[in-house]
Image (cartoon, rainbow, N blue to C red; front, side, top):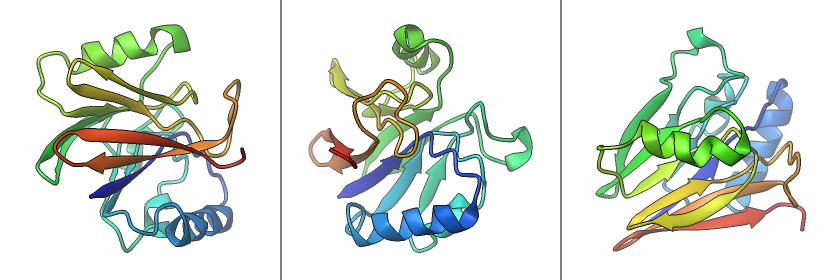
Length: 163
């Protein structure tokens, strides 16, 4: 089973967001079973752009507190537990903060965002995964999205959109 992963999309225009979603659904996300968004959608209507798929999101620092999206959550998909949080602080401390937020909670993967820097590595048996940003790469080499592959364990793939 494949899961599409986004973060830090920062869309302010629904038409642009729909175009982006349509491209993903026809391409890299054509065979995904669900979408995870690790915060900073900016427009809550982004969920409607992926209407045909289950959508799980967390609130980022650029999202309205009134958007009805939790700051963190754990979702069960395909028998796997996936923790989600946007993250905060500097890029050098973000992994430590994210891991501390889920300390003591069993998870097969931990998905986060905020830094716009892709991360795909294991901390023990748990996958630590940040898909980066498809719209604002900041100091990252490329604009990126992610795929989680749920098998006997969760594996991650970072996909460069422009390289």
